[in-house]
Image 1 (cartoon, rainbow, N blue to C red):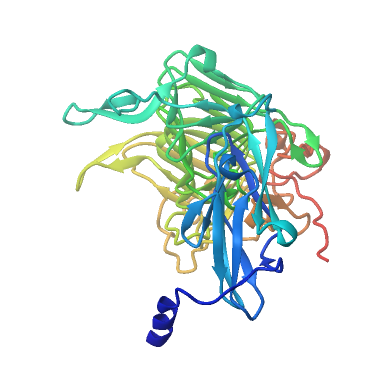
Image 2: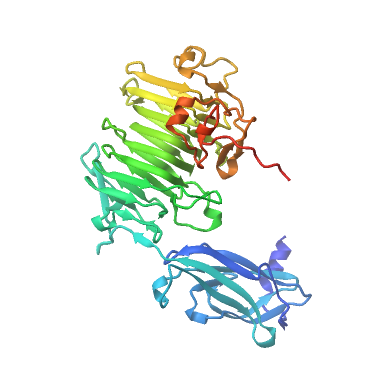
Length: 510
């Protein structure tokens, strides 16, 4: 190995012949996917092959638009847009790395989105070979905190720590003119976009909200967030749903957890609503705090996927959810913590996290937090009702209850399918679990495969006559939520199913 390294490092003046237009390429067109204006693309790479038995020299490698191109190249460690005399050893190859950043305002009369193209030209004249470069550029509404002359950034003060020092996060409060998000353009948020006391952020059907790293939305006490999409069935696509996700649009980022922070509903925020909305690839999908006595958060036809930590984390919250689906969370898909009031109907709480070890179940419910070695803060769990739901995943037990008897702890699971395997009877003597309290689990089924359609792609449709959730639902609850997540009428069947989807016949595999 030492001899090879010595030979390679010393061969700086090998004899070459000029290329003859017979280069090989790993790709003849490089698509840099979709980017937002002024946000850099990911770096793509291609290989250029010399398949001949002679060492060659490429006289020139350049972008067709030269130094004015918005693409940037890096060839074997050298950045630039125009290169000369690039060597390739016989039967060897070199890497070319490509990236771009594009300001849509630099183009005359740009549309909302347009294709930006260029070429990498290898050699000239009759020997010239081209590789096409294509990027879709989208315009967007950019919302971000101010940058001050002293180098600091605008912040939102969250409160004071135990020493009276302000605790802050990078962010800003939305102006009145910014409190309606439309579907005209996507929104890209840097830092936390705050909804101040007494204000309401309205997000209209079809809106797309993208967050930069460590960014999110924060709703203050007395503020509200209303993200109400609309359902339109067109080739099984909900065109008017609202989507919250990261600002990296490349397909390789489509299901990467933890790309942005959270939608944070602070204590005292009120009348928050989400309907026909998808929240994906965050740290925490929705973090809500506090209980003002009313329904603090209402979820209808909401999907939360690929959360690095928790899908929905409610602390002493008041939540009503119908047709909710949460999956793929690094910790817990649903955490009803520190007491509160929770009512879920026809919802699917799953966790098939496969990006590492998971310690927590799909659903966790508790009514206390430990404050010292032997001290606890205890809160009343007024109710946590799960009706016609599915609680399932790839762990042995997907439901855990932590009860402190110093306060009430009211739970019930009705006509629900639950994954809860306890072969050694470890939970037989613990109150609120099925062995001691079967009346809390009326008409509930345990440990029968729900037969989800495609968990890897977050499709939790269930199969007729196969799923453990098929036909186990209560008609009374189905009457309250007559349509499933994709618009199927539950009222048209004699025995409704549990979960967010009414069962269907799956297509046969080819």
